[in-house]
Length: 295
Ligand code: MG
Image (cartoon, rainbow, N blue to C red; front, side, top):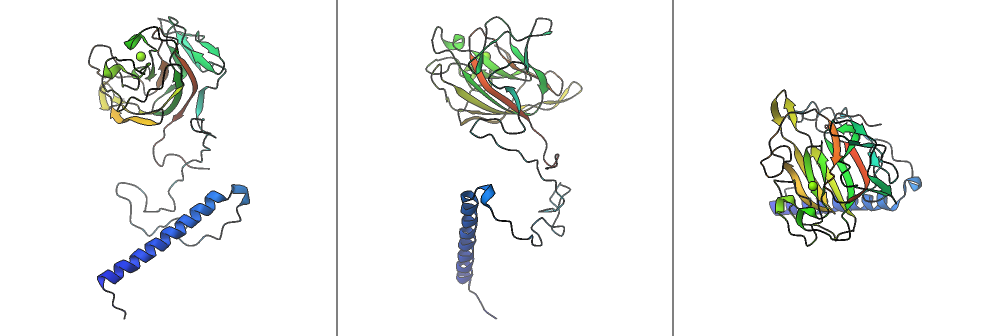
């Protein structure tokens, strides 16, 4: 029987780990180098390749570790470039039409959208009211691009103000915050009235900017709030909110509180009187883990 000292054992483990890492890196490099059409047929499956049934149960889950019967997630084809909609996105604006949107009158009646569409973007027409999706959403991933007016005609909250209102109630502020002092919880990227962004990632006025937002809708049971809303915001590639809890519906000069509402509601873009532009708007409904079967 071979007796290994502790240091020898560690050395062997270290050599094996390095070899495994090198092998993994080689496989990854090969996968990256080969386009799908050039790949040869895969080797036959070995026991355990597709999972196990003799492993411990995962705590709190109806699955074994590496469970062979665990549903596979759906296949989604990513967009061809950063910001392009993946295959399962609902495209809310494709550069041409506001067919997925309406303006809403004071009685809540949906009207044909009055905002202007030109050259691949749409623009707030002041005093026509906020733009509202015809479809309702709850938990979502949202991508939206926006640009505030190049010409500076006002300051603070009057400069390029609009807003992405999740469910019509929870605002991620849109504002020209490039060298434009205003109160911190009202600048661009703020969860308006409560949380300033973790960083000011503003581009100059007139330039296109991106928001990638992950929103978890609040849950109510009757009149009671059982789970608050959470918002993650990535602004121009910078994380500015990391699953931040919301205190309630966005309000001005007051403290937010919750009031019960439907599980899904339209997304709203705010008419704050400034001709802010938007383009490439898409949304994905978020599903729960293990809730969808892949194809
Ligand atoms: Mg606003």
